[in-house]
Length: 84
Image (cartoon, rainbow, N blue to C red; front, side):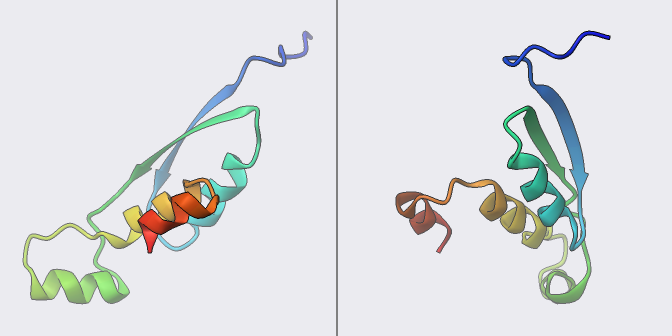
């Protein structure tokens, strides 16, 4: 069996939603051999998102999107300003 070329990256699509998805995404994103795409389900009604969706009917849940974006953004100080 041939070993993969060092410049070849494995494409992974993570269908996300729920509390554990951001930790799985951050673990996968740490590996230089992985090209990660995260698809986030925004039709969430748990915890604080459920309260928001009750207050604003038809609103999609922003929480999982925010968690995944903040997990996958580079951690340099100039980038952290955009998630504060």
